[in-house]
Length: 115
Image (cartoon, rainbow, N blue to C red; front, side, top):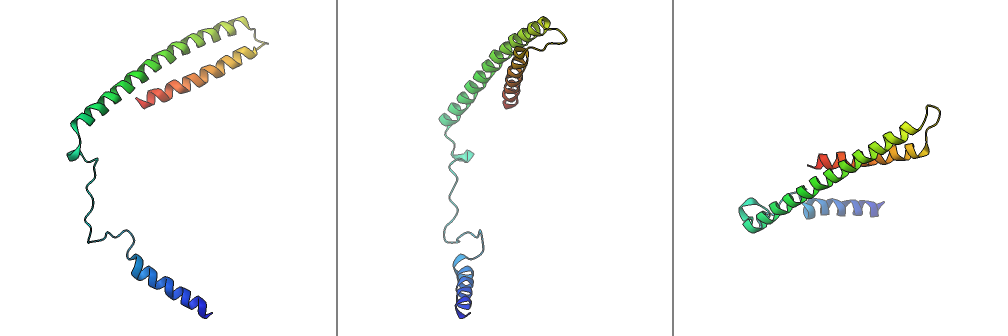
């Protein structure tokens, strides 16, 4: 029982003296300036970042065009498959093609959201 009291007392003292208020800043050390702040931004670095963002946007646009062309081709193929089936038979190829189209369409949608 006495050892619990001693442990509780030690924990209380450590929390009160050692830690201080949570999140309090030490008054002896001023906050460090942030290197990413606009006042310290390097113009060359900024231009490089803009150029990289522009290139990434152009690549994303090219990928969107390529994927939508592929999507159109796959949809045309799906229509051809469906035209060859009758109302009693649904080909496994038709189902697989529809699943591929669905995945590609989802990918195109996500790329468009990123723009």
